Image 1: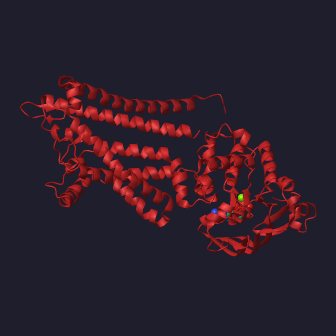
Image 2 (image 1 turned 90 degrees about the horizontal axis):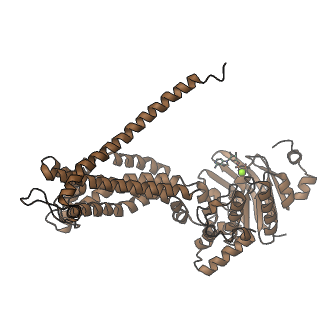
Image 3 (image 1 turned 90 degrees about the vertical axis):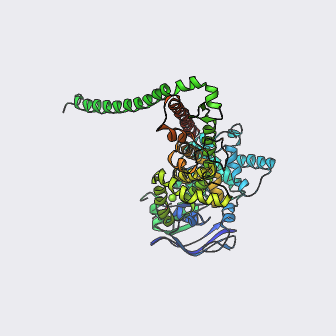
Length: 251
Length: 295
Ligand SMILES: Nc1ncnc2c1ncn2[C@@H]1O[C@H](COP(=O)(O)OP(=O)(O)O)[C@@H](O)[C@H]1O
Ligand SMILES: [Mg+2]
């Protein structure tokens, strides 16, 4: 097993609020890691440290270590723009830009200096294909992305993230705003993407974690209670709190 | 309780809606009145002088023995003056707005925004006064002119005057852009400046267009400040010459005018009114278009 993120003794505070306590975990490459736990336990906070989106919140303080492919990303002077290009993110609420489908996908590559028209065309097509939405959208490339359905918008956002050729994909409850059909399309897609990408997905839905993930991390009140193979977590959890949570006794 | 008895609710609603209707009608009534009055007062002179001679005549000599009533110099001065003010004021205002809405710290905003409000509240005569005391002499010495009162001075004063409304409206437009767009862009590895100019500004463009039109409206309608720094000679416009705007043409002669001269002043007011109506119509179209595109 190859580790993509190595998290050691990681702590995070929002001002005085100690939101993540001494987290230790090794996130595996080309696997799907699900983060579960009740609302407010720190799942989003954790996933946002992996691409340094927490830098945008001035009150955040960090300690400990997270190494991405061996490079320290906590409190270190790395190029965050390059990190975010490598570690892409899909948000809970689909957030396509108010521009055409094409321009949405081409946004990232253009940002990273690709101007050549035919190269951009290839990237747009490949990204849409990889996000399993090319056939639906191939005649609508010039239309505004805001006219798409919620599920299409979310897959467009996945395609947009893929267009910068990331290495890791972070997804924060990507299906919580979607209907069941769109949700299962995205789940299929995520399973498919595992071949080429390492995926960390926050989910509120335990069935979803069971269906798609290889590893599951259970967070509770800022603690990482248990982190193990998904089968193990859902069949023989070693912590009583995990068991209570997955059997629906709270949360 | 009798649920089907709606009489008390009905009567309150009837009174309220009647009051709003009356207020609305009064409002529309005033606009119509001004419209009709301006047309009645302004048309005769245009007919007498001839619309072509009036609108495209290059010479205005209202009190000469053989009077001339060509207002092309005023029209062009107003257009050039307004365009100049926008060319200077828009980039300044726009960049200030991006800075204040997106880059500046809370502290800076806390200090600067009240100052902008203050700038917006200063009466135009004060702008004119400062322009007259500071700007006009500086232009004279800087460019070695016999007199600094000129189109250029008026453009600078107008640019400063429209700055606060351009900044305020642009800030509102920029802040109305959902934060998800910004996060989406940053998460793709774009830097902050790229994010502002490639995602947030385009998303705010109809609001910014509204800011421009608002600025145009304010600049073209301004009389007092312009009168104090533009020199007011009825020349065809040229950057460092004394010029007269549509507004100042009306204001400067109204008090002593009579006969056809007075009627012609009303006609100038009518022309100004048409300009302002066109600007408002443009504003409405821009705002509507902005609304439709986000559907
Ligand atoms: N921007 C923020 N500023 C301050 N506190 C925050 C912020 N975001 C989250 N928190 C706090 O951090 C804790 C974890 O929140 P979050 O990571 O959003 O949880 P989850 O995604 O698991 O629901 C909560 O107590 C929340 O109030
Ligand atoms: Mg969350």
